[in-house]
Image 1 (cartoon, one colour):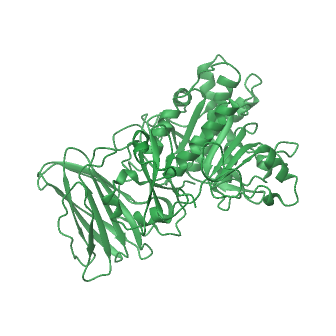
Image 2 (tube, rainbow, N blue to C red):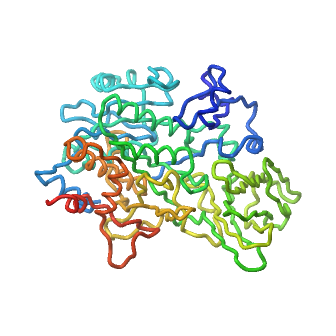
Image 3 (tube, rainbow, N blue to C red):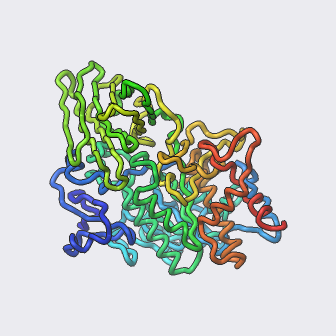
Length: 557
């Protein structure tokens, strides 16, 4: 079995420059010009393997982030304008997600042929591996059309979207008109490139104490998916919009992760747009913030752990230059005592009066950011309220953020007793240049309560824009239609609008060097802004997306 598929090997992120010194022929997988994967054997994943090996080398774990009148975004006005009529012609829409129901009418032309250029299914190992990659199966449009005309299509193209999230996101952005004309995506004339992600390796889930049955993906596979989209678009010489409707609360929330950095880079290239979801962590009570400026220089905070949550992680990120210790106590007040920062230490605590086990890495220097990180991992934690004391070692003012897992990785019964809804943007939404999209209820013009809020940990303005995200009509597997709610749906909606602008600029020759970052700034300039708010802000960003306003400000229409 290939090592990238083998659960007996860790996939560790390393710098591509150092990769040749580790290369033995089959243990290196290129991710980007900057990063590669090193596959190293592990007999049995053990939490303190993170400690022996640096935190930043382990890929983060991502979960899905997710329907509405198209008129709310000014799309209908632009499409009806005879001088614009932008429907995504000549633009590729790329999705890295749970796959696609390629049989669905939402992804077919009027003659029944597919609008999908290609699918890379990372989970199927029986087909042709894409050029430049080492696993999975690629199906081009010719093969998909052959399957569509077959009595047994899955015998030819055996890829399915068993979750439905990827199908929904692709249809919101780029779905064809339904037979009764009641449904359409934003750019129904665009073409699609699809990556179906394989699930994260169990050894990575074990490292971060995520249940093995949790549905999530590892960051490195998403990066590979993005690279596949880019290479395919380069072969076709067409502009590309990438939609990432996935997110994670792991990491420093400052855009320095591998995926965030990669998207920040490529969106500055001509003809590449990137739309990412802001996350749905605004009201989940999974973020805590403290700033202690007076004596005594410590802060006590509390976490309620529900009975359902048998294993999970928690990350504490203090601000430099302070160094912080942590003291953890069970509901019956059995304590770890103060745990001081160190360079490469992992400590396991077995409590006497409960079967709870806690691992603590108090990392004085997290290599990717240069900041301190306190990683706490729980196994069979005693249900109830746990107590934490963060304390400055120098007895000086200090502040820190603390995050719990996002999405369905924990239940809603585990939460901070005094939570902070701000700084809850999930990665890769904390990146500098990609368009980070939050969701609002287009029926009431109010932000969705679950929408994550900015800013980033370093104060960067995020989200960038708000898009419709409440019960958005979408395709669902089985040639059916339903709705989707959340910032994933909003990011797909915004991705369609990016495609409209790229069609106007590149496909029609009005601005052939247009970058995704240029498009983002045009979208921000054309946003609707209420007189009741000050912009930008950490809830709405720069306002509500409106592509008609964009063109009115850009031209003399």
